[in-house]
Image (cartoon, rainbow, N blue to C red; front, side):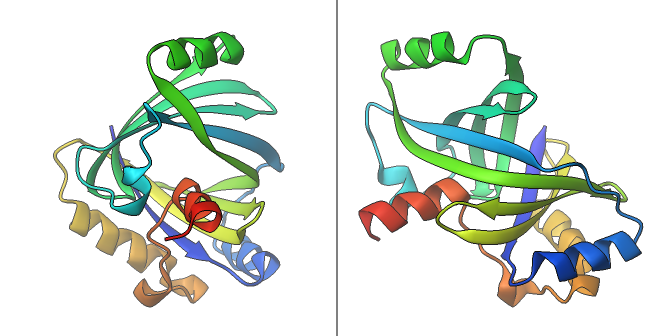
Length: 183
């Protein structure tokens, strides 16, 4: 499946949560997530100048267990082919990745609350070192027009007072990498 998402830095999550609740969204309990993002053979170029075809792998540890995720970038950093599976033993997977030449490069710690707005998934995230964000995403067929989906997502989020000019195009991992290593 193709995951297309928009991300926005927000000032007051409580205000956004109240607006979304008024639109019929029911939020999950807060979920702590710790993502370890790996790079192939220590390469960090994908964070400075990402391009179509770049691959990101991560192990996500959360209150409900662990997942392995691979994203292959399509038209931009927030448009990826995504493959995800549950992991029973994240430490063994970590060792497998290192044997295959991957290195843990960035760790993203966040508290996440999820809800649905129609067919869209929305997350309110409080990210260590970065602050508060809203993500809206849609899972679509691999051959979808990404700009049409982005237009759809922007329209869905406008009632919250968030617009194209407010979008944060970089992923949390990229933002944290640049925070620690410069631009």
